[in-house]
Image (cartoon, rainbow, N blue to C red; front, side, top):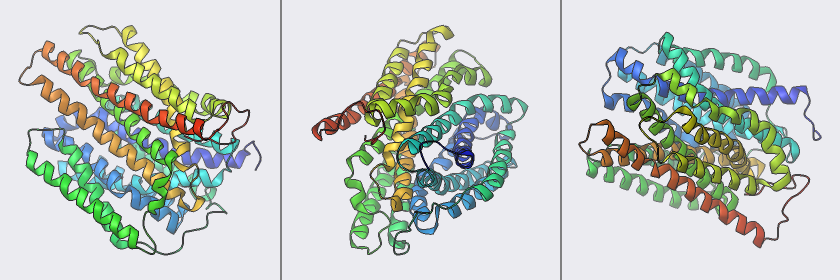
Length: 476
């Protein structure tokens, strides 16, 4: 393949993009439909929170195992099988009549996504050679992933107006179309030599248990007064399993996670940046939803439409971002995107009780630009310099960071909001608590900028040239 992609290459890319779009839109639509689900099934606040947390637990808990499975068992096989599982359990969620049914369906859907996402990313990197083609393909892929979430906010509001069950049935239709197209189109990359050895079962059990416990601990932080001792115990057990996993991997002949991969500075910076960037947006989106729906009385559809401008990344990420990466390099483009995100959140800090949408628009527009510039380079950096045989593992590490970021961002803003609100219930107290909690996304975005700045220093120290006419590399 040269610099241009033929029709088949575009078809393969669109199928893989469809799967990551499906994942993003599925999560966003459910978030918007939660009030309707509560009203229909009579769920408690704890059960409703559990519906969201169940997906995060399944996704974050099994992600590293999913990445290794893609490398060992084949990216195409894992992608197709778990796409089918995603389809089945999304449909079962739509037939739920009790809260526990939704919990099971969302947990299984999260597990399916944990195996499907790293396989999909490894298929993108494996099917497109490093250079302009891969840069463009990853730009399209990342833009689709981010766009799926922002467009899902609108789609969820629209579908929920017809009935919340359509929020589950719509992904079934979309995933069925993607699966039918993927079977003849998606092939295992010719150069995808599989790592030697089999599964490290002791490592798999220990890391999966550690991830489940740590994500659960983060979710419990949303309610700081609810059993602090239990939360501390959960974190302690998770950290103990993580320490055991490290010992197991050092002694294993065929480790689940080759610890040497964690010595890659670009990979660590990409994962840390992704955690902070996505976490800041997850917290911000939650607070904006509270502000618009509970303080201003906007409908779910109006809230989704207000966030629609963030979806400009769906257009800009595959068109503008690859050109900027080719011209300035991955790290500079990423750095610019993170700066825009920090500025966007800071502009929203003085939010008032009667802000017009025109006052909110600069924040939304800047966030759209931030996603356009940051999400793609983060995805590119996650596999840069990593052996082709470990691209599934690298993808698993990236998506694990994203899920932890989402859980941590939501939990942090919720905990700060609850603490700041205290016993107050007036609109003024709610607004003051919301402004206090908005400091969390600002701080997370600023920290992401600082982490990425180390990449700029490392690039200069290594004597890497700045602007380049062609993407000789996309280091971060």
